[in-house]
Image (cartoon, rainbow, N blue to C red):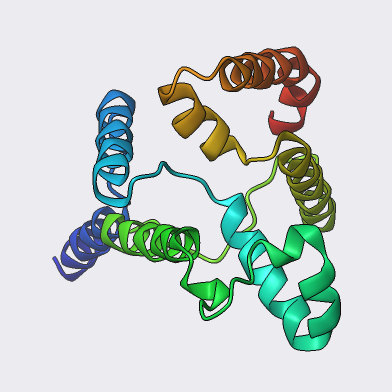
Length: 186
């Protein structure tokens, strides 16, 4: 009888620790669309993230080398007189994304310290791939003059032809490369 009670308690604890299911992707898409609409109405601009990184870089460079930051055409755009670069709309947006993601993960029971990887990939290899991929994405965002979210969400919603071409290339590239990496996850 005691062992049955322990088994029931253990099973209940296991069920309690099981994370809640992910949100319906169609509902999430509608939610992102409504957030985008709200940012256009309330802030007068769309979503994006790379501008926040650029504002932080401009601020850090201005701390170390203020003369260079003011003379650099790219960095000086983020260093307007009387306005701190970290008070930019996009910086608050990115901080909100991190806080919202953490809150969502906590509420869904999905916060855990782990490195997601395939069975044939080491942790160090996975982190190296992530670092290189992030660097390539940052380089691409600089060349495209905007990040994926800015190009796809904001540019796409404004029917920007370049943004639509960008997203077609992103999806086409992902579909073309996926079979090469699929074996790593089996």
